[in-house]
Image (cartoon, rainbow, N blue to C red; front, side, top):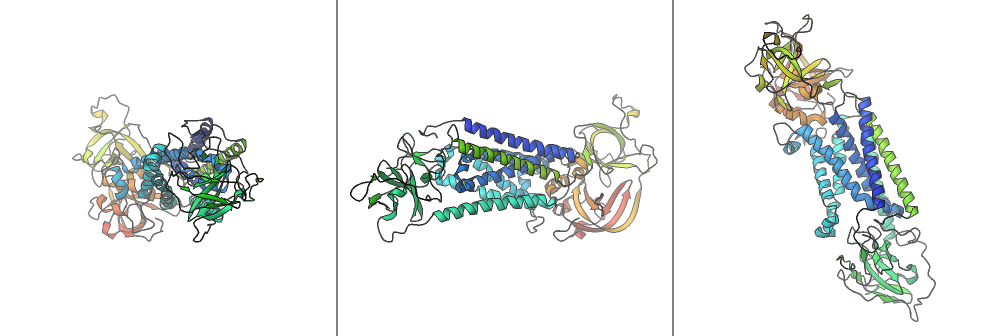
Length: 634
């Protein structure tokens, strides 16, 4: 709204703010992705996008929550309020990209509805270390969506100010949920000091600003006790600057007492738009009280907005006696007309020199800075300087935080996935112990290679090769590999019997590998061992996702293993080098459905280890798996 209470659209001020916002966000995401790609070239694009937009949204939420108390502490920050809605919507969009991509990547393309999977993939509510963190983020995202969807004044008018304000106060619930989301997710997978340090500093800053603003308001909110009197002595007439207000607390409510043109009137201090402080506003030449936050206006003698607007605030009866302003603390219904009290007479000299009280009702002189209504085309020069410096400082700090977080990420594994790249492979299909393609080494002087086979997305390949055990085939697929261990995602319908030399006739490039000679598969017992590690799905861990382990990947691993992708136990030596062992029962059966509740947890398993060609297999019944105490590292 403008000074004359007319609806306005964009203005140069908001355009500048939004340009700074766009520059800050795009610069942050580009910086985070660029640093990650440079320092960690094996990181997948999905991971870089997830982390960049997620951290950007979380940082922006801190900025949004800081604006309110900053404005209460220093009115020079008030212009930032004019863009807070745009900040909020931008923050939600970043969070939606983060949440949507996470749901798609970790919960989609499997055997369950992705939104159901968010709440069912991990049900370890009995463990702090394993407590589900993704449902917390999902609920926070729903709250942020409701706030973004109702940010327009249309919803403020139709929901009513109290309901709208209560809904938007849920931002603090969303913030608490997101702090827990980070603490129970990212902090447990990346044990470095930066994430907990920066999260703790952010939470401390928000809490400190709100406490400081509350303390300042509390010092100013000195209740005026009138005892049993009908009218309460609020202040001297001269304590109220011309066309400004004195704010007093009467019967637990802030009341703004305005003085103008030899008259005194009192209204509720809370603007009906967003509870803005009317007492910090001013009566303009049109005779209306103008809220400094968004320019909403009210007539001081009735608390009604000028036509055609319909907002109303409660009014109070006033009187002037012996140079003192008296107010009846009992509020009248919103919009009730009240005759203003007249200043003058034998005991009240309307022509007495005016002066400003040493400290205004909110702890500062009401006229110590330029009066400003948000959404005006231009900020006054002093405010413009403050907001420009604040914006530049915020962007600089955000980029520094992004640089720190991107640089301090846990090292990514030397793994890769040829997404979208199809090669031709030639070998022998094996169904036992899991779907595999067995190929000879290039020179034929070593044990055959076993490529674990999967179907696209979160599905195993058992159905694809059923009944073809031992068959020599040619197939198309995309290769994933990590530390010499390889996995092949089969292109649907690409399996053909025989090798190209047997009459394939496709004219395709020479296939990778060759089938080993019949009867060369060797199973070598390696004895019984007790191993400590974590269960992951072989597909993601071997390169389709990076990282593809620990708690942040648990939901995806559950969907993959439920879909038939072989589960493996990841065991790390003292140097952190990982080895994988295929998990089967003591009778050789698949254990996919039996290990779902133990994925990504530190476990101890005792069983028989075998070597199938170059594949290590651990035989043990899942009933014998032992969970290690919370906080243990695999």
